[in-house]
Image 1 (tube, rainbow, N blue to C red):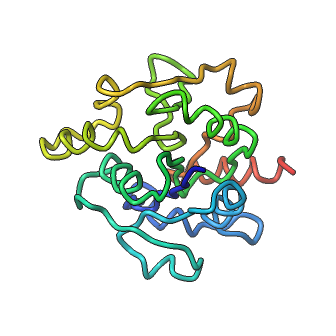
Image 2 (cartoon, rainbow, N blue to C red):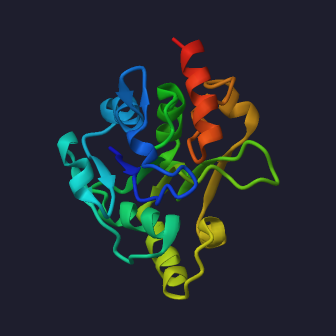
Length: 198
């Protein structure tokens, strides 16, 4: 079994409004995310420091163990709070998650401490679409204490299994899984894409 954490801790500063609560076809972006992952785990929770905003979803919510530590702090908190040895971490602003790709990631969980899509090297892996094990906690914690917040900074201290472009494309040939909403321009593209997809 594996836990699933939806990271909802960003400030949405570039977007100008809370991106989790943007609406596509009558459904909030975060609702789309939750709908895609809810069948994959018996331990689905939201990682947020604003629990009042997400209480209507009826899920367990966890705050940051080390506040103010950006995405790495959120990932640490998600791993720390997970009830299972492995946790799939996804972002709240990825409206086109692919369940079959997520199932494949989950199936690989026993093979490494981190299971991460790496689609376009030298660009970094997709760290908010990744499976982490509890073995990552000491390596992340040591970096948080030093305020070294690059998410992949601890990867050298654990075992990592990357999924390259070809492997990901078997499940998501258009890579829509990794579309997210950071800016108004991103949002315009997402709305156009949503009209095209079933």
